[in-house]
Every structure is written in structure tokens, then in C-alpha cells.
Length: 152
Image (cartoon, rainbow, N blue to C red; front, side, top):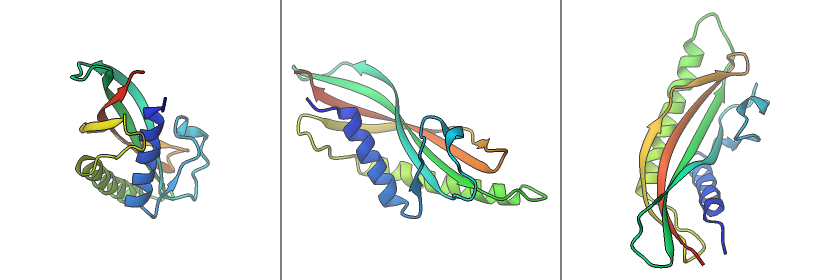
């Protein structure tokens, strides 16, 4: 039996890498503070979050609404004002909007035939965070991916 969450994460990471080729994957997606980010611009992550079983229509299959996080971060040099921080944050918003549009327009095709993405919806962009002594801007969006998979 395949792991549909793993398939979605792999597809999500590949999509981000394709849509934002000037970005690199972060080392620690779950503990952002563990990353050494100074001087490393434009990083991304894609992680699963909470999931909810929903009513499905096919016997032998389970349908779920699963929340996934898209994480973008960018470092900047502290200056006398926040202009560089603001510019980096604006760039992150632009790139995040591009990703959300891509995820909504072209849902993933999963490698296991019994696993299927039905819908990508519910995009929410959270308030930005600033880590590493205010030298790194982090922008996280959540999307809900509805999928079904074969039970057994």
C-alpha cells in the first residue's frame, strides 16, 4: 500500500522547485529556527498538517481533506530602516501567490493509480514571521487538498 501523504509531499516539493527555480529546499521544514539561513536567500518547504475524514462516494476508498503548508523564506541584511525587509516580504508574497495559483490550476497526478487528488482549495496566507534575529522573513500558506485512496 502506498503512502498518499508522502506522494503529495514529493509532488508539492517538485512543483515548488519547478515554479520557483531560483529557490532551494530548506533543511528543516518543521523547525525553521534550526536552519542556518543567514546569507542563504530564497528557500522553501512543503509539509503536511492536520487531516479530516470526509464522506466519500466509493466503496473501498477513503476521502480526506488534508491541510498542507507551503513555506517560503528569504534572508536580508539589517539596515537602518525596514526597506530591505519590506522588499523581501513583497517578493515572498508575489512568489506565494504564484504557487497558490499553480497548485489550484494544475492538481498533482499521483504515481499510485488508486490515489487521486480531487480538489485543492482553502488557500490562506498567514501573517509573516521574522526569525534569526530579524534577518529572515518567513511566509507560510496553507492549502487544503482533498484526495481519496484505497483502504485495502
